Each structure stands twice: as C-alpha cells, then as structure tokens.
Image 1: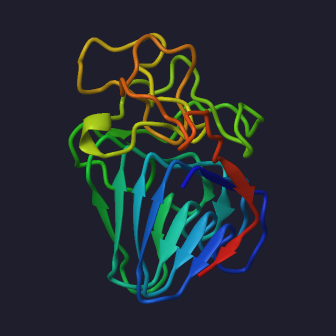
Image 2: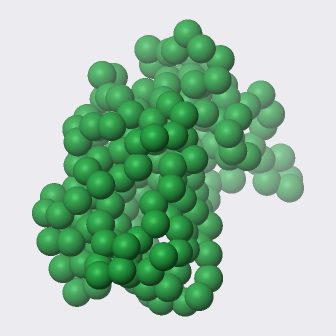
Length: 220
C-alpha cells in the first residue's frame, strides 16, 4: 500500500510479476511508465489481486498494456484507474481468459470491466505525468476535468487516505453527492473541500506518518 512502481522494463510484468497461488491486496498504489511484452504494469500467473484506489496508467505492452493474466483467478477493481496504457488492451489476457471484476467506482479503459456502480469507461482519464506530488513516490495527479474527480467512494472501502498519506478529500471542484467524495485512483487533488474521513491519521505518538514509497519492479 501507498507505493509507486515506476519506470521498469521486463519481459513479463513490467512492474509486477506474480506466480504464487495467493491473493494480493493492493491499495493506494501507482503503476506508471513500466514496459513489458506481457502485462505493462503487472502480469498474473495463478494469482488473484484486489486493487483499491490504484492508478495504472502510462504503461506499455503488446498484450495487457496495464494488466495481463493467464488464469481464471479474479482481478477485482474498486475505486481504481486502469486506462491510457499503450499497446494492447488495458486489461488483457494471455491464453487462458483472465477474470476481471468491477466492484464499482472505476475509470476503466479498453478491456476493463465498466459494469459496476459508478464506473466510467474512458481511454483518456486526463492524468498528469509522473511527478513528485508529495510522498516518497511519483504519482499522477488528475486534471480538474478528469473523469476520476469525485468518482470514488470512500464508503465502499476502509481506506481513508490516499497515496500521499493525506485524508481523502472531496476533490476540487467537489461533487454534490455525499457518496462520491473522493477521486478514483491513488491520489486526489488538493486543496480539499471536505474530508472523506474526519479522524486524524497519526502514528502512535500523535505525529504525522509518511508511508508512501517508490519501488522498482516486484516479483512475487
């Protein structure tokens, strides 16, 4: 969680290759500018993954420019952006059909499910380039006109901060519905109009804790 995986090159899974019979839980993560033949951001072989408030954009691969898989294990997407990757479909298959499931409030590119509550299908999520936007890892901030703005739903998950470790806000320019009070994807615009969560995010000593990090590619 709260991690950026960026600027990697690999034959399988530019940012992440997973071949364990397990389920990965990933939240507040950015995968950007990774390159591969299969799975620009990640390649899943016999592995399931649950993605919540993730941004997967700007990666490239001939098959599965964002995500590629070779098993029936589910890729579950919620509050996430998987769009504007280059090459094959943003959500792709390598032989055996990968199961993609929307749990709602996603910005979905080619091949990704867009049948969940609040999903928005678009190949242009209007994200900024990978930049130092706060936290330790580079992130991709949504533009003010981005479909991701106010498209997320904090109430649908237990995540109340974004990758930069700030409370998730109701994004500029702010929505009119209470439920959609945070951007889809790993980060949200600032300043906040109102917090998604009224509590404080602190360490055990009452001080702000920065937990974002930037990683090279992962092998699981």
